[in-house]
Image 1 (tube, rainbow over the protein chains, first blue to last red):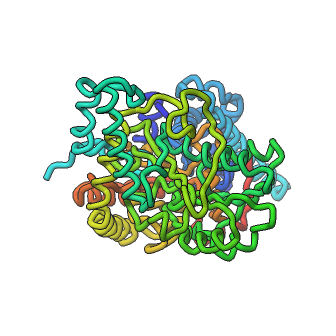
Image 2 (image 1 turned 45 degrees about the vertical axis):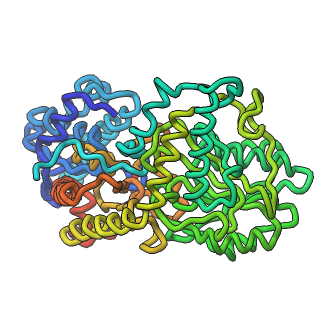
Image 3 (image 1 turned 30 degrees about the horizontal axis):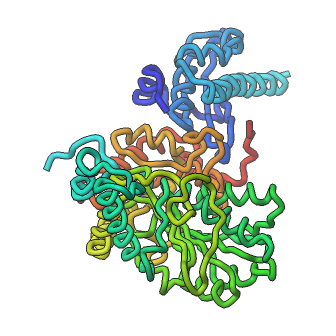
Amino acid sequence: MAYSEKVIEHYENPRNVGTLDKEDASVGTGLVGAPACGDVMRLQIRVNPETEVVEDAKFKTFGCGSAIASSSLVTEWVKGKTLDEAMALKNSEIVEELNLPPVKIHCSVLAEDAIKSAIADFRAKQAKRSEAAE
Amino acid sequence: MAIELPIYMDNAATTPVDPRVLEAMLPYFTQKFGNAASRSHRFGWEAEEAVDYARVQVAKLIGAASEKEIVFTSGATESDNLAIKGVAHFYQKKGNHIITCKTEHKAVLDPCKRLERQGFEVTYLTPAKDGRVSAEDVRAAITDKTILVSLMLVNNEIGSMHPIAEIGEVTREAGVLLHCDAVQGVGKVDFDVERFKVDLCSISAHKMYGPKGVGALYVRRSKPRVRLVAEMDGGGHERGMRSGTLNVPGIVGFGKACEIAVSEWRADAERLHALRERLLGRIRGSLEEVHLNGAELPHAVPGIVNLSFAFVEGEAMMMAIKDVAVSSGSACTSASLEPSYVLRALGVNEEMAHSSIRFGLGRFTTEEEVDYVGDLVVSEVERLREMSPLYEMYKEGVDLSSIEWQAH
């Protein structure tokens, strides 16, 4: 399979590989995919609760080069965005940016799911906190 | 010594032509170009002579009693098709049951599936975890309707070897024909159609340092005499079993490759054994959670080393070692998005199947190449594991099977 230059570039120099403390209330974690399917993405965001701006993003991915590149790209994109902006991210934008072939579109879908799941996790944590505060 | 990139380590897919083979072939393209079926002039006689000589060379390698038992084909896919469908259609009055194994090559499984649609019954044996079926498994599956057992000598993905000699005892006693796809084993391991009691045997030149596009089917002529319905209608070449003008240069090269294998296979096998140990030692010495798929030696061919690197996906791994030509059982490398059916038939879990890499060592693989590949694999697996959420969870002591994954 031939990869686009952008996939290779992200694969060889992945941005924001790492781990944030998932117990931290300002951190949202999305873990999507399944080992049996050949890809698992974990995307984490650190969000400023006041401004809802994503201040940091980290990922770890088990998957092919396109899966790694998709998650790397998403961490780059969401940094500095508000949660609403990040929520609006579409997998088709990833496909376009990385020039993914049809068989690799599921990698971009997974990356979109991962960011949405991380945002949902963060929001659930915040809701719990405000409930506890009431 | 400087390493030349890329490194070819996919010798189970195909092998380079041995220079001695090429040399033998060359005159048959330009000077001795005759049609082996031309009976009326010297060009034809010369070509026919060359083909007959090659027939003897092939027969000798597999221990055939007579060179007349060798039918030249375009390769092992054709040989497998001719053997299975040819036998099924000839003996269908005698019975309609065929026995094979889930891990056979598609060139065996797909003809079996076609026969099923035509009313034949096929038993697909499940191999043990090491990829092997036993003679007992075969004996238990034979019914009074069984006409053919088709099992491979060496599995192309994992290198495991069925005990063909023991299975041959069972089939001969039961009066059932035994077809063996010996593509990955001939010229590499001990094999002899007489001693192993094999009745039909498929071989291919390009897996043993010969050219692509030529192979053979061994068809036993006595005790028992095997009969076939031909697949191809035409000029009645190859004693009516395979019509079509013979690929004379290819056949000459095939013969030469067989002749070399007769005198060198033992030395090759010993060298490959040492290279295998070297590669495994280098990788297993530095990495945890590396699993060998298939059987251990001596129940496997030394040149095929199939490893699963847990927590790392196979295609990402191949991309990481892009200057090394290998194969993966990962879904992502196939059009179907399904991981290897061979590994799944062994009961290897899907995650491990996605993490598998097949290294194919061959006659021209060097120690330096093995060292280079071993070191590269270690450093790249380490890099990818640092990126893998599964490895992090494993290190934290999380049981990965306890997690409810969101399959998509």
